Length: 256
View (spheres, rainbow, N blue to C red):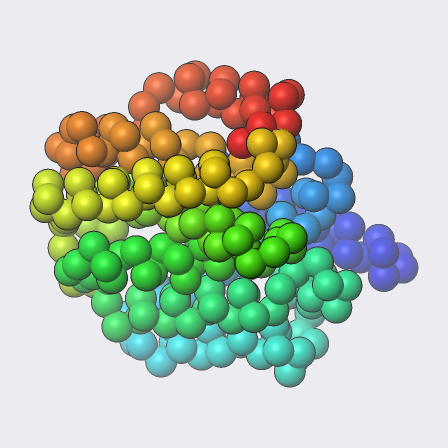
């Protein structure tokens, strides 16, 4: 096979990883064009790899070594054959993924190695901006500084919603996790909704598949603010049919 075919196989492998490990982002990526999917699947697979690294072992060094591998990949210090690493390196070289934002994502994940007991809304917001906010920025160039901030805000709002959705899983993982209080949930929900409002005011109405990855954020944040008990009970997600139906509509209309 030639290099192009090799990369196509890698992208397909990334898509399978994302479908299995991050169903919502898989669905949102599928609303994009083939060119968009060729960028988003490796990016989302990369995110899965670094998100899992801190939890691969109770030994912190194991997680640090794994994250260092991905740092070396992004910085071009290793050429290891890997289904995810190969397309990520190629996309960075083509200018289709932003290496600085990928490194921001790795930096944020390093904090998980020391434990996930974030005790303040500010700490959770910083984490969401360094993970989901940076990931939104990694895949789409902004026209100006205002649009760049709005994209970061959109990704951060999505990250806050996902953090609230993940509370039952984080509790099972342990690692010092502390369930948020009703007050903290309300603060995070308000912050996420504020960030979404800013994104709406400063981004085009027509969106990309990357932007549609935040399609659940508003409903999740609104539900969390009104019913904080759902955050801890695992009932925050809402009806499966309704959330998928909205994404289909957004894909058809080009909205986000």
